[in-house]
Amino acid sequence: MALELDTPHGPARVHLHAAAADPVAALVLGHGAGGGVGAPDLVVATEAAHGAGVTVALVEQPYRVAGRRSPAPAAQLDAAWAAVVAQLRAGALGGLPLVAGGRSSGARVACRTAGETGAIAVLCLAFPLHPPGRPEKTRVAELEAVDVPVLVVQGESDPFGMPPAGAGREVARLRGNHGLRSDAPGLRDAVGRWLERVLSTSA
Image (cartoon, rainbow, N blue to C red; front, side):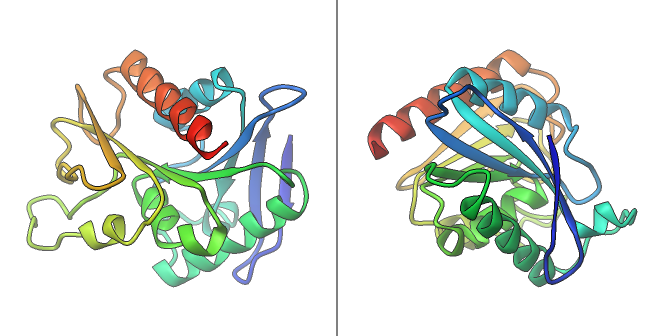
């Protein structure tokens, strides 16, 4: 089921994938800067979430809905994301514990807004730790600022770097690069097991 939701920066589109008649939680995922919600790792993460009894909402940012390829500035991405999550929590996902996440740019948005959205955990697929070849431009502070459990699933040869594990932050290293296409079973297993652990702990 697809929903169009208003945000301060234009309409966003949400693709809802219900897990079961009685889901245990919701996972809201955002896409990367130049891609969409059909990215292979988002598809696999959705399958893993369903296996854990979790409903998934895949969010298309307003710039993508408007047909633009270039991403909006970070502040606009964050504001649109927060508006979408607030509406989902008040409606389709009401009453469910919420895990936020996304791939690449979407993972950064989920981290930056984790407190505002009330997420109980954050799932980062291919977190872009730094621009390729620019390790001094680290974005580790965005991960460090999250005070709920975090799982980072990262390709071992990702040119955007390998985020470090930390307090409350697990890192699953998989074969492959930034696309996370090379080890779908590993990705599915890592996400599924982590969701089950996080949700059992929060319950």
